[in-house]
Amino acid sequence: MVFHSLKEVQSELSSKSLSLKNVVSQYLQNIEARMNLNAFIEVWGDEALAQAELIQQKIDNGTAGKLAGMVIAIKDNICYKNHKVSASSKILEGFESLYSATVVERILAEDAIIIGRLNCDEFAMGSSNETSYYGAVKNPLNENCVPGGSSGGASAAVAADFCLAALGSDTGGSIRQPASFTGIVGMKPTYGAVSRYGLIAYASSFDQIGPMTKCVEDAEVLLQVIGGPDAYDSTTLLEALPAAAVRASKPKIAYLKEAVESEAVHPEIRDRINSILDKLKSEGYTVESISFPYLDYMVPAYYVLTTAEASSNLARFDGINYGYRSKDAKGIDETYRKSRTEGFGREVKRRILLGSFVLSSGYIDAYYGTGQRVRRVLQEKTKAIFDQYDFLLSPTCTDVAFEFGAKSKDPISMYMQDIFTVHANLTGNPAISIPCGKESTTGLPFGLQVTARHKEDSDLFAFSKSLEALVS
Ligand code: GLN
Image (cartoon, rainbow, N blue to C red; front, side, top):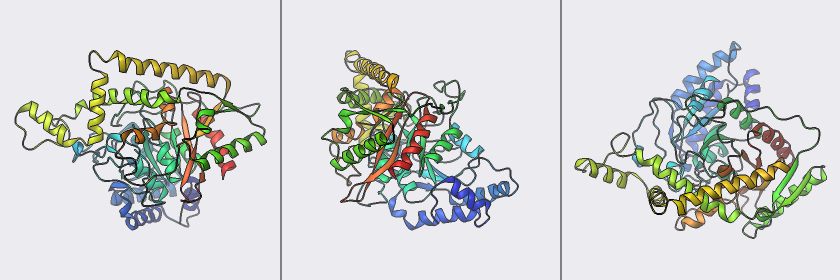
């Protein structure tokens, strides 16, 4: 029994050939059989089974919510009341959430079942899940390779059939890149479409929670449930996202010449994207190449700005209020220093240091100020593209999943993983990764990234559904 969509589960449930408890048990068995993947930090099996019984009753008497039948897991940076949450960091070891994230409240209200919390890079900083305090996650498609990051537990769990869907977070690509590496769908909504209340902050002006699923339709249903205004997050949009536009003609598509023709992109990925572009043209879409000579600025601007925000967001983890406290510290200063020194991992410390440096007096304008100005230019240039085109296509990543250790010694090569994904976070646009092919020698999957105008998430889904059919 392998389900590919919520619709499939719901039709089995309504035909009564299966109970919701059977569905949960099957996922628990799948998890048990491949514990070595290390996708979960904690599995809430008994709780999920108990929920299944309650929701089954609602299904039987016709009062179940939209997500009844969906077994979902959440990244370990999303708070769930009375459950542990750690952002995969030692500094939050043992910490229990006092409240639930808005997204958690909303999926529970629609009868989803949360089966556990998922491993990720520490504080969502990374592209391979190798920075987790709880150890790396294996890619279920090739256990010598990473599942992507930072939502690596999430991508592995969906790809290995440990749950139907997962909620991840995406600051610079952490939903889309792992989706690309494991052959699933991952979507980063428009900035502000989903409340960040209860998401452990990394870089607040970039972070968005989003769905990771097996098909575009499930991502859409999930976004409808988790999205919308929230009084607890003043950066949420004031109104719900509009429905997809009814179009008189086929949407106009642009692709970035610098991305699709780049030597840095694996030749098979380039060829596959080109063949998809040709197919779209033959189906009557306007598909045009555009030049966007700013790719080189994106990763540096992203890392200057996100480390600055992280250095401030992570100041709260001081050994006093949350989780870990150094045992042998004397006095308040030493408690701060030792708890942070012992509690944070290397990559997180690197970013706090970098972020503090770019914000320091004397350098703030040269680094942080410049980063902000570059962000503004990128936003304006991107808006100009969307004045003419409806969607922007590119590969999600330059390559397929890499082996453990291949990039962890060289932060710059790890940061370059994000070359195509950080764009949408810098500008706030919605973007999705859809599986579109497999590399011939390794058989590993790779994704196609589609970006849309601000707030046109529904249009993005509509177009992605036709793409999904076209590339399969
Ligand atoms: N890989 C990027 C980083 O390390 C993206 C992380 C994310 O989106 N959370 O910052």
